[in-house]
Image (cartoon, rainbow, N blue to C red; front, top):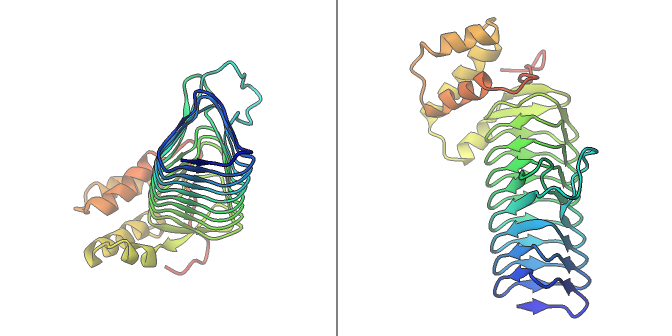
Length: 263
C-alpha cells in the first residue's frame, strides 16, 4: 500500500493491498477500496462507497458525493458500488443513491472517459465505454457492452440496451433497444452490425436481429402488433432479447427510427 503523505485517509477506511493513493486525495471513513487500485491526485471518495480490485481512478474524480436531488437529505443512508478493473478517468463525478437504502452501481471492466457524470441510482453493466463529457441523469440503466459517444446526454429513468452504439453529441429521453445504432435526438438509425460481429454473434443471430429490427421498425405494424407477430416466430435468444426489451420499455417508450434511415 502506497499513500502519499498529503493524502487524507479517514480512520475506518478499508484499503486493499498494493493500492496507491495520490497527492491531496481524500478518502472517507466508510470507503472500502479493493487491492491493486490506483487513485491519482485530488480524488475524493466519500459516503458509503465500495470499490473493487484493480481499478484506476484519475485526477480530480469525485465518487460517492451526495446526489443532485433537491429532495435528498444527508441523513439518508445510500451507497455506491463499483466492481473490478474499471478505468475512471480525470474529473468524473459519480453520485451515490438518493432514496433511503438505494445504490448507484457500476460493474466490471468499464471505461469512463474524462468528465463523465453518472447521476444517482444509475446502473452500468460490464464492458461499457462512456466517452468524454457524457451526462447520465438519475436512474439511467446502461447494459453490457454499450458505447456512449462523447458529449451525449441521457434523461433520467431511461434504459440503454446491450451493445447499443451511440453517436457523439446526441441526446435521449426514450429507451434505446439492444443492438441498435442511435444518434441525434431520440433517433434510431439501424442495427449495430459491426458491434455484433466484434462481440462474436453468429451469422444466424445477426440475421435474426436484423429481421427483428425490421419487424419492429419497418413492417408498418405498431409496437403491440409487432410484439404479437414476434411471438409467433421462432427467433433465437438475441432476437428474443430485443423484443423483451421493447415489451418492458419504460414509460416514455422506445426511440423511433430516423425517417429516411437506410435499412
